[in-house]
Length: 397
Image (cartoon, rainbow, N blue to C red; front, side, top):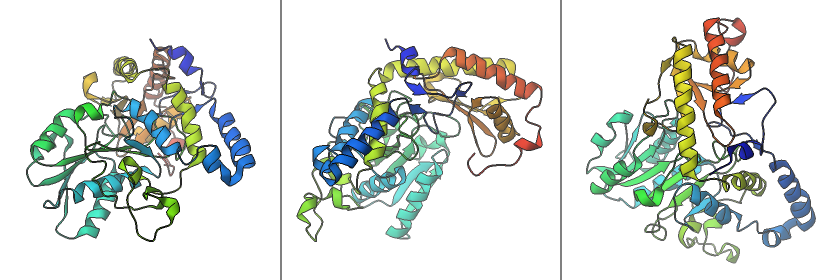
């Protein structure tokens, strides 16, 4: 059994703060600063450019990718790190579309993160006016998977409500209609018990700065199923995805398997910080994380509904149908969240009226949940949100 008291002690959490926003940015692993200092001084400082070989920097994206693979139920050797999530969405979608040359429709849903939709819109516009991005309500996705769909592109958890899609069922239906799948795991990697191989997913992407605690701007990952690994052509034919980068050929030849999905230079320092977080993840399993998460989110819902009748639950009540977040609707949600943050409980706000709270058992426990609900009750009962200081919206909400 995971000792969550021990894992909590391995994060730098500010005194007096209950951090319920790890679904947006995970907290700092205590070991990360020293690890980055070591890479900067002993590797970059002493080895200089020889660090690419001596310190193993060039192999870092594949090595870290294998550590991520365990957390998302992927086969070893089929996850690689690098670039941003938007870049990885573009890569995966472009490759999947090319593998379905006779189809022109990408199906997604209105609960998808907007940047995924933006990347799809840009890509499809480049491919031609006969391509279509079809966006439906989350609950209508299954009914809209037809023989004209080329790619089903879905974020597994709705970033606003926490609603969890059934990856296995939707993938099976997509395949039955000849479509491929691209799954965005931004809100499930490190949050739910993802099983890419078991669900027969085709492509998956995700970020590492949320539940995986890699730090601001930490690199994204991409997964390609073994059956597609040597067939998927990388639309972004980057230098490090070349079969032989240091041959300096003028023509691109894709590397073997997942290596072809590399694009730019590995972010060595960011990966060093992420590895410290993954050391903590090595102390648990996703099955244990998922069970603890469901307990925490259920407790939070019960406590808040008992204390705060003005808040309306936006998240599925059934634990099996939600990720590791809880969202409540409130007309003055932004101001209420600012009042809550001022009192040491950090969540976030998503337009138009969503107060959002993330739960990571690695550093959040039942006592934190009860204390957060008590402070939220004070904010709501005493209308502490009705203060001009909390009305002006910052650039990041």
